[in-house]
Image (cartoon, rainbow, N blue to C red; front, side):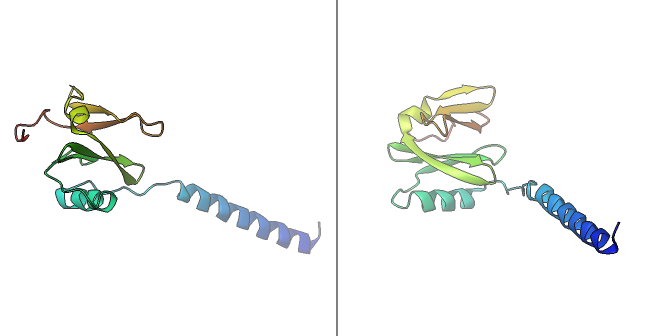
Length: 129
């Protein structure tokens, strides 16, 4: 084998190894911080700037939130390392199935068929009529 061939082969193999390592590292997601009330209000305010939040409930593990805004419910759910917000009627959200500490809200969307939020109880005691 030629010396130039070995140098070129070694350089190519090193470059491929670096690209494989970079691709492996790119698949590792960064953990997203849990929601608190201020962050949930900020995120909902960005998606629904014309809505005033009357009441807000943060899911137990901080991976979602449910807010009441008049006759509407604003749902915030974690998707990947970000959050998605959806609006639906308050009646649909308040009558959602609550079982085993999880509130299952049907969103009736192809991309997000339902939102699952962990609460201690539902409906909460501080729910205004």
